[in-house]
Length: 158
Image (cartoon, rainbow, N blue to C red; front, top):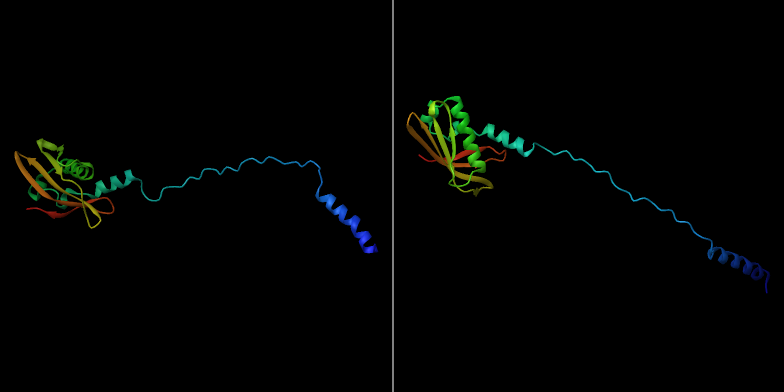
């Protein structure tokens, strides 16, 4: 046997013995990693804020009420009619009029038709009846909800 082979044999045996060690191994338990909840603030106004802003920008003065009646309405009449007009268009059931009453016996009702999709906007036919001093003033038309949520008359009937 050559000298190199005699030196390599024990060295190989020691190397293999180190790999096949039977020493006990210790494993450490690791706690699971839990991410903390992340709060993401909503972008833009809340639905309630959008509805409130739309209510304020939907005005009966913009073609929802007969101009002759509008000229005789008090500020309370206008506020009640405005609210009824908006909520009828926004949430009303077709054929179920939304009633309102104002100052000095003035009253009104807003009836709406079903939603119709036109140019990517929700639209509805409406009939707004105002009764002042025993006389009825009726305005019919079609209104569409703009992207900001407000309703705009797009077609008024005579």
